Image (cartoon, rainbow, N blue to C red):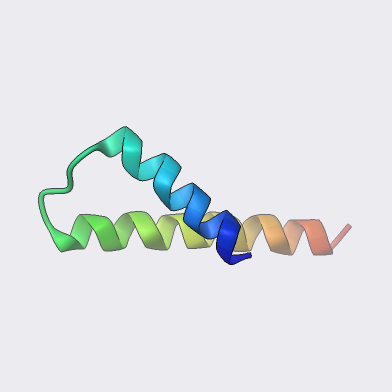
Length: 46
């Protein structure tokens, strides 16, 4: 699970490039974790 999270963080942060402040970094991390959580919930309900 951690490897996937780290991979997604790297992939999405490369697209953005530089972050102007910490709030935007936190927003990106939270959105990635929400996406992974939703995928996990949907995958376990099948």
